[in-house]
Image (cartoon, rainbow, N blue to C red):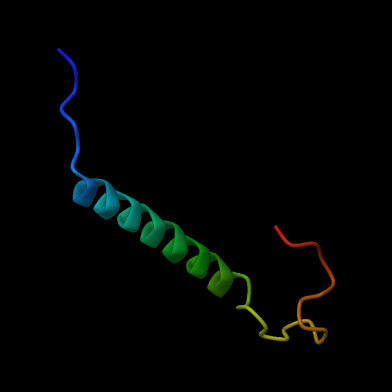
Length: 51
């Protein structure tokens, strides 16, 4: 039996949910490493390569 087709609205909701989860995880990671542009190492975080 083939799977049921999803509506465009359902697909958009799933994408939005996944993007929001990814953004929250990225923000949490930035908070844990001192924040973006926090100048914690006195050169604005420019001493290492981006992840």
